Amino acid sequence: MFRYYCRLALNSILQAKVHSSLTILTVALGIAACTIVLTLLHSMSSNPIAHKSEQLFRVQLDNWDPNQAAVSPDLPPEFVTWTDAQNIVQAKQAKRQVASAITWGMVNPAEQGLTPFLALMRVTGKDFFPMFDVPFLFGAGWDETSEQNNDYVVVLSKEINQQVFNGANSVGQTLTMLGATFTVVGVLNDWHLSPKFYDMSYGAFSDPEEMYLPFGLKAIFELPHGGITNCWKPVESEHYEVFLHSECTNFQLWVELDNAQDKAQFNDYLTHYVEQQKSLGRFPRPMNNRLLNVHQWLDYKQVVKQDIQIMFWLSVMFLLVCLINAASLLSAKLHTKHNEIGLRRALGANFGQIVMQYSLEVIIVGFCGGILGVLLAVAGLRGVASLYAGYGHLIELNISIALGVILLAVFGTIIAGLIPVYTACRPVPAMQLKQ
Figure (cartoon, rainbow, N blue to C red):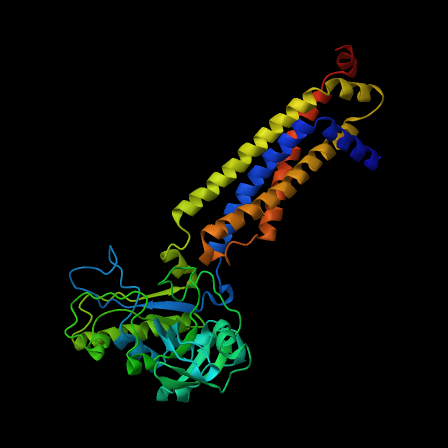
């Protein structure tokens, strides 16, 4: 009987090809629009390190102008100074602590017979790699001794290792860069946090750096100040050391704290630290330390913009409009089948059998609309990716989202299709046959 009803449903769809095509296309457009926006929203709002989100904290200290807040109305700067970054990292009051900054420099792989190139670098601490669960293809990060001695060591991205060493295990190999010889201690595996919460200076979805160096080498090589630099009072001299020890902020500072007790203890340490710095003539503003975990930091930075959220609700409304239109088309079609329904009821078909027959037709229409909608969503996402080439890793179809939207569309289409079926079954069969 089920196969018979399926055959009836397919015959009904094929007999009204134009009507069925319009219904399928209407459902498909709503599914495609909703899937595209939901995919983008999911990618942008996801927590890239959810399992440690409550243990990683962004540190903010208010060393700013006594007469004006760094961020209105009364918030501290997002970055810290070189002095505070060095002091807090060296104090080791957290399970892990790391300061870092973006910079760049020339790489001269003459030994490999390659042309010199400019590489994007990050100066950071050894805790950076375990704190952010950075995966390694070869080797590991540098150790405590190398960090304290400011050894010339480097961790390469997988792409740079492929470019310079043809993807081989380069741990222990040397590389000429910044006018010195560096030893490779590690090579990263594929790694791209999205959003890039630990440093959004160049955007929340920017690519990770190509090389990683010990933090102290920034001063030794006088590396450029990448990212965002803010100063609330003029720097007294153009000398590099003077800038480093000024009140200019340029460094991200993160700590890892396992529980609420550790967080409270670290908060106490920050309070004592700022009080100590106040006695040295710094931190003229009232105490205003902040510790924001990953989720709070993403909310603070408004990674998901309001216009994206508006687009989400518009896409949902568009899907509902498409489903309503599809339901209207189905109602118009089923209205022409009242006599057929009356004849089947007169021959003994009960309400459940009639509902099954036309529900199968609605399901097939909804399913075909879902398949076409997914194809349109894939095409739409590729179009968006071509417009924003740097964000291609974000713009990939999420299967679970697509299936969820399809199920919603099919369920909504069934509900809408059952209404005219119920209406058609209400009159007495004799009256339907008479008409």
